Image 1 (cartoon, rainbow, N blue to C red):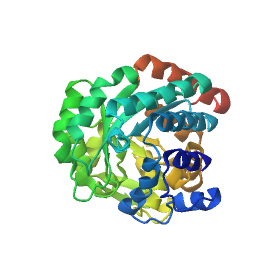
Image 2: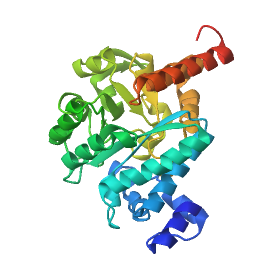
Image 3: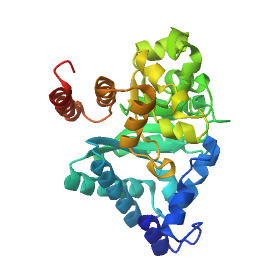
Image 4: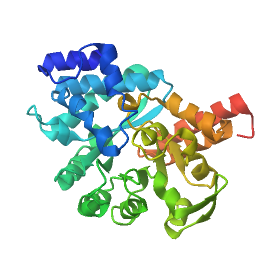
Length: 331
């Protein structure tokens, strides 16, 4: 909380709901938000204090350092450059500032980090954002994303932007199946050419589940599983946005056991008060994940990563060696 308070002071922003770090941290925790739209409202304040190059660079640097402290070896940070232009920055300057902070964090921590540029559904600039992603690859941009409120914003609306990115060889991940159901997932894959789905957990609605396990697949679910369309699952975020009532009811375990390409992610560490360690713990405590499961989801994440293959290949080799050394040759 010290960072946001200091950034607010530097920017002259007086809109924070509290000036006490403890009270502010409690306010930012969106565990009781109950919906995606409500969850997203808290971003008003974080975005407000990140309107200068210095602020963006600091937050990017600290993000990498925080991830490294949690044991993360590889990360893809995603953000919407268009949200950070109110102070006069051009979108290209926004990306450059974030890239600068990431480079500093990488050098100091060793956590390899890349950027995914995000277009917000409730804006009208997805094609411009796609062009920005294409033009910023030399700064570490490895992907294009569409995110934000799902209701009333079908993913098919963004097919032109996604086509531009895809044809320029920029891979795509789309937030889908978080607020709305399987239709958004289908559109992300078939209209937007997404290789990965942000959240995607409501694909479970196109399956039959008996006694906690998937026993039958609909056509879309079969396509997602059989073609290894990666699901970027963030359990705690899904609980906070009201998709599932508790961790035990979340379908991450059923999807994983059924052979879907499940990965574990944090979504938003601040609003959900989470970390990769906490997401792993939830999977262990409520879905019985053990070393073999964590090895599998970690391999799936690196397999589906957007960074250059030689980098991910080395990381995969290290991960395999570490799991086998710690837990046995069967892994």
